[in-house]
Image (cartoon, rainbow, N blue to C red; front, side, top):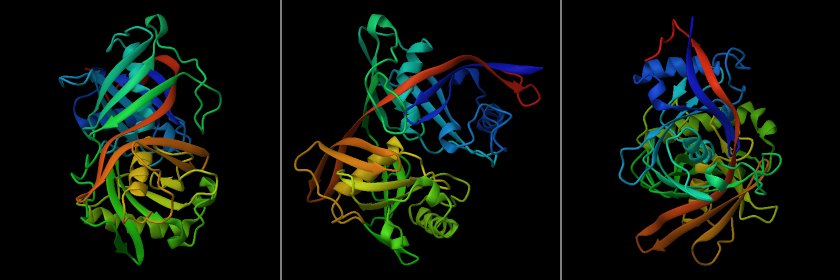
Length: 362
């Protein structure tokens, strides 16, 4: 016997995975982790016994519920399931998967479509961030057809406009968790920053890299990964995050001067693989690092005049643009909001099954 669980299978931004109703899943987090491991097939490089895709960007899970928050319409609880290690991390959030939350919430009946465009207020449970998503709903039905393009996804789709608020210090409680704009760890200067996603950010040149390497080339560089992971773990201790050897946060980022007409070149690590494109949350943190004076990005990019400022990050598959509403004051950098346009698509709907010896249902 197996236990059926209703789900939507969706692409959100440059990630994909199942979107499920939180009420259809175990409340206990340990049991929930067991269920998600079974759903995704974690423990095999191809996720052959589940619906994961054998990569970190395809082993992500969104769990939705009506929100009890006065501001929000829907709560979004995220889980990152590892490909091979049978681990589930509930600490981070994912902005790419969040792109599908508005459409999924409408499809699941958690939010009612309202006219040609429907605004969905989303509370990211993992970090406390507030996100406004504008979903295309002509005829009060979600539309996935349109002309919006994002690098890393073939074809075009309907745009989903996202506005992120309350993203500073969501995990560590501070914009600069170590209290410093720059720390030196193992001889490498890094900026430890918590905006939408806690990150450790360095210059690519500090590792004798150009910053323009492909994701595949970086993943083959085992010496770099060993050095990067040692720095990441030490940085996490300084950030008050404890032992992160089994956690995907903080993430790691590398910066280099722009070569393609953008603001700056960036590579984002998940952290044990290079992201094939760019995380939406990571993009906000990297953009904030570029705009804040005195960080490792200082002097690497031409800063746009005025606010909101458009920061274009050149990633391994193209570019991503972040519109940042911010202030630089006598007391430092202050982020008000960050906006992006992404796309999503419903791929499948139905039931996914887990063995009953893992969970028999609610």
